[in-house]
Length: 147
Image (cartoon, rainbow, N blue to C red; front, side, top):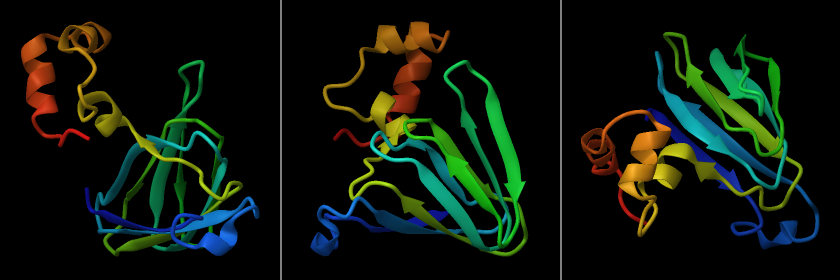
C-alpha cells in the first residue's frame, strides 16, 4: 500500500487506560503511498500533516465524498465511524500524526472486512453488492489473507 502505521493505543501503552486518548503516526511513500479505506468505530480522528502533502477523504452516510489536499502543517478531521483514506500526492514522502478521542479507536479496513474475514461474506452477497460476478469477487478475495 505504500504506508506504515505506528500505533500508540492502550494495547501498546497500558498507561493510556481510562484516559480516552490515543495517537498514530503514518509514513507514506511518495506519489501514491496509501492508507487504504478504513474506519474507526470508537473515535473521531484529527490528522496533522507533518511532512509532504496528502489527499484525504471520507464518504458521508448520504454518499457524499468529501476530499481535500492537505499540505504540510494542515489538519483534517474524520468523523467517528466514517470510512476514510489518505494518500501521498507529492514527490517527497509524507508523514501524518493522528490523534483519537478514544484509548482504543478500533480500526476496520474495508478490504480486509469484506474479503479477508473468515469464513467470509458469501461470494453471491458481495457480487450483488458490488454489481459484478462471483469470479471477480473470488479474484479479489484471493489477495486477502483470512483472519
